[in-house]
Length: 401
Image (cartoon, rainbow, N blue to C red; front, side, top):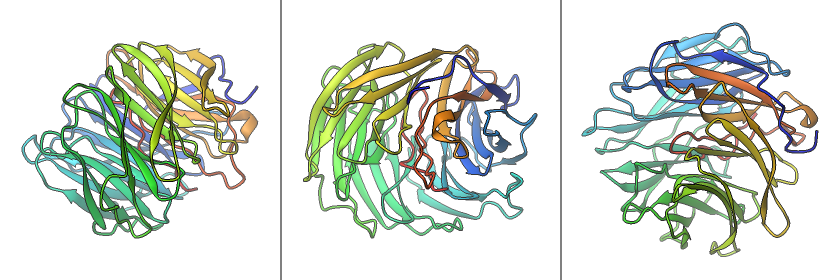
């Protein structure tokens, strides 16, 4: 297999949402060894379940989930997971009805047998209690233990806050808070951020509520988690509707976006210079499905990505001129909407395994799945991870093994 080649079919799958329930949203991250964690949410947002399960390095699942925790919540719009350290995962979710929504970050421990700790959650931190604090996103900055939370305040104001989460799962109070954009379209896009690979500059992507165009902003975040005094640059990367965005970078000043523009799917590159100023690269058409999720799968040259468009998996590469092109594709029939996937950290680069989650066409059963993808991992096996589904959005920059 060449880098980016995808297997001819899914290797294995596991039903992890109660069969017959109306599973609406879900997420997955690696926890420790062969164990992964998934969170799933029913259609009414009243049941939020965190489960652990194992997948071996051949892509085979155990017969059943290993452990389960029901997370106390009232009405949840979205919940997502991120790996913090070996055996520690962080869950971010909004909790409350539409007038009192708040954003909470909680950490959970997973032991070598895949069991959650008896005292979980390890720690919790309420990020905001402002009404309308839904559409949450959490990603790691390049600075040790420092994370950035993105969320909406009120009906549309996009806000970012920083905090620290250490390797034991302890969460700090908020370090700094910054309003990013005042008129976010929360229905057709999920805001998210990523380190650009240039200095302390981070890129935030969102859909403008006024005309649904796609925008990026760059902001500086220093080692103390403090935002720059003002936005560094604002860039309209799509002028004819930029929705359902997903974003990653090559850690060297090139951003790669997947999104829908007027019913057509596109992949586009945007470059960031040493001052944090952005400019358009190249755009290619990838199809008309409005659900995108993208993750980097080459951790050496950092120029290959795995992309999910509903039921179709694709890989894309970018060349030295930042021009994207498709490498391989797989159409599978188990899940209609794939939400997120991570690289199994226990495999070598020539026989990579992607582990993901998604739901069937009727939204009645939530599955974990595995597929072979030729990935390239570094010697220290940092696991790339991403988020996406419906409002596809990258959730984190990288998990720490």
